[in-house]
Amino acid sequence: GLDAASGVQAALREKNIGVEVGGFRVPIVPAAILFDLRNGGDKDWGRYPPYRELGYEAAQATTTDFPLGTVGAGTGALTSGLKGGLGSASTMLDSGVTIGALAAVNPTGSVTVGRSRHFWAAPFEIGDEFGGLGYPDPIPEDARKILLKYRDRRAGEHPEGASTTIAVIATDAVLSKSAAKRLAISAHDGFARAIWPTHTPADGDLVFALATGRSGIELSADAAIDLYTAAGSTMARAISRGVHAATPADGDLFPVWSSR
Image (cartoon, rainbow, N blue to C red; front, side):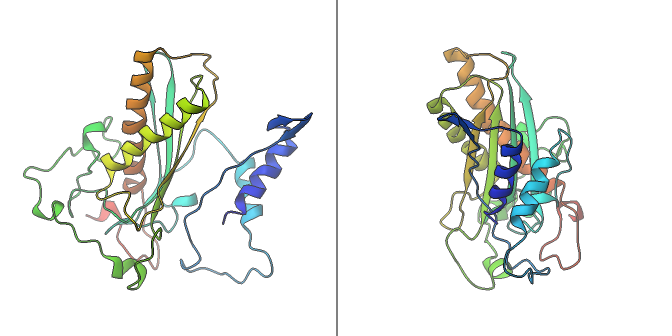
């Protein structure tokens, strides 16, 4: 799956987008994947898998409007007890800066409070973007001692990194490299707000951070705190929305949230 980055790189090169090195534009494309070789489907692709071409097509098809749930990197994703999915959310800050998150949600843990319909990220929800249910009252007993169904997901295996949530946190603020790293660290807090448990030995969690600088805004110390705070809440919302939007398909191992 990592070969998809080669296709994205090719698309960027055609558009002369990349880092200037010695008079050349070099498109740098970091990559991470959800392992999908055991998810069914036709794997008889011959010598080369289709990921490079799929990456190229995806880069050519980018748009500001896109579906969530069981699409793209979220296809086949699972959580503990429910289908995962592709989720996104954004926040506009008082400073005029915008921050957005995109997450492929495939964690070991659960995004709902026990086996209820309520999301752990409920305090950060805007409107009813993932059901508007708030927290259950009382908190279900199984929320405190949730048992992860490895056998349902991994055929009895317990490999490290076999589950993961991979995400991107992006802003139009002007950030230094160290500030962008801080943005990624803060976005990981959103994992902890949306998934229980998270960052386990069975998870390969990763957040990429980027700053376009398009707003031209360089944040003060106080405004930077707002940005990093929003990174966590926006990421938590994106994760929840990915699961909330999942749709059923033939051969599903787990049900979708809407079936509860």
